[in-house]
Length: 108
Image (cartoon, rainbow, N blue to C red; front, top):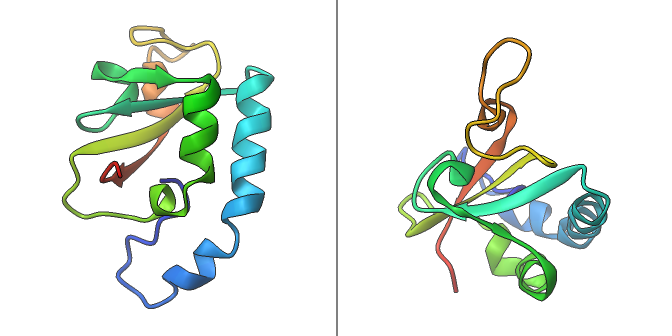
C-alpha cells in the first residue's frame, strides 16, 4: 500500500517490519481528518475510486499483504489530504490528488 518497495530491491522484508507503526499513524490521521484513504482502478485512486473508512480501513491497514507493492494490480490505494474530494482545487489550481500518495495493490 504505502510503504511498498517499487525499486525492485531485496528489502521488502525490511519495510514489512514497519507496517504496524505506519498502520497506526494512518489510522490516527484518518480518524482526525488529516488524510483520507481511497481505493480506485488506477492512479490517482481518489478520482474514480471510493473512500475507505471504519472497519474496512482497519482491516486493510492490519493486513501485511495490503502494504506490498504489485506492479500489475487490479486496484490502487492512495492517500489524499483530509476533506479533499475529487474536483477540489488548491490555491494553485491543482486538484487535491496532486498532493496525494498512491500505491498499487492486488486486493486479497
